[in-house]
Amino acid sequence: MNSNKHILILGADGYLGWPTAMYFSKLGYQVTAVDNYFRRNACTELDVGMLYPVPSLIERAKIWYDKTGKEIKVVIGDLQEPELVRSFFDGRVQYQWAVDNAFTGIPETVVHYAEQPSAPYSLLNYKYANVTIANNLLITNNLMFAVKDLSPKTHVIHVGTMGEYGTPNIDIEEGWLDIEHNGRKDKFLFPRQAGSLYHTTKIMDTDLMWFAVRMWDLRITDLMQGPVYGIETEESLIDERLKTLFNYDEIFGTVINRFITQAIVGYPLTVYGKGGQTRGYININDTLQCVHKSALNPPKLGELKIYNQIMETFSVNELAEKVRRVGEKLGYSVEVKSIDNPRKEAEEHYYNPSYQGLLELGVKPHYLTDASMEEMFKVVEEYKNNIRRDVIFRGVKW
Ligand code: USQ
Image (cartoon, rainbow, N blue to C red; front, side, top):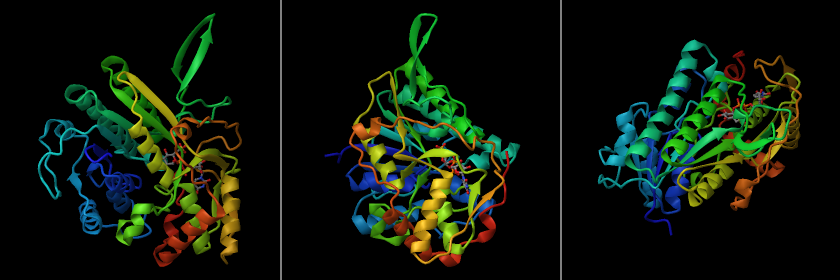
């Protein structure tokens, strides 16, 4: 079993981080969870609201321990500080909460989610752009140096984004492209052209990691993820206080989560522009499976593995139509309204990404079915009275 494996989760208080911490803990891994509360502080600062309040990371780890008898060690701190990152590998780490305060040992795997994840946030103004660039790049760089200097065999799993590729007029491969030029051939990272500064930092992360792989023979997996939807995971069903945070606002909410919330409060679904924007989507439960399969299949030393982490593709219009149909079945009257697109993005375009790699590793997809949407409607409905209409659309432009 995995009982002696140690996994370090950076960004463990976020939408994906906390469910990932519980998932690996349940599987028997030793889990160390780190966060500086960036996301919840940003939500407070920008007054975007969340669907329900979420206990602190320390409180959640305690609830998890009470319910399951399993320990998730918690460290609260800013990973832009290189000594904090290094402390996980040289034993200087101080846990803010743990059942046993002794050093767990060097992690075999690090999951790196510790990034400012919102495209609109990164383009609010130059200050938020700087926060995004500094946070995302410094943390990735700190991690690369810590692993190189102190534990070069540790497997780093980074969550990147499909947005690194943009929407090119050719098929999107999984990370790499064979190029023939003037009669010679070589393999390169697939061309990247991001549509926001946030997405651009993920391209730069990939470059930092590819450099570390080439120069120092690190082993890294980069997961190019599409927009995630969903709330409950198997582990959060144990106690409602273990549910992950849920945003439906313009800055931190992803489109499916937003549309379902909008349908419930009778806010016309906010289709940006023509609605032909097509992306690859993934259920939050599949994010967990993908990270797990990646952890079980580390690259060789000196290898950067890249997977496209999506399960199906939809245009915004198709999503709006699905949410409208399911909402009406549940008794809501749902209007779909196209509004001027606040973003600069192609609204009609070719989109054909390949995403076989994770399926070949054994991931079993959850698709966006009526049943899965009905479940989301039911959970969001419970908190209907908390939903704030004023945060749904403020028009952050770029
Ligand atoms: N959209 C609408 N109406 C809305 C919200 C979004 O039409 O009310 C459109 C957007 O214009 C975009 C698409 O829906 O074309 C997806 O938007 P999103 O807000 O769900 O996703 P995005 O800003 O691209 O970012 C999200 C996550 C980010 C992740 C990315 C994956 O916040 O962390 O990296 O999805 S991807 O989109 O593949 O780059």
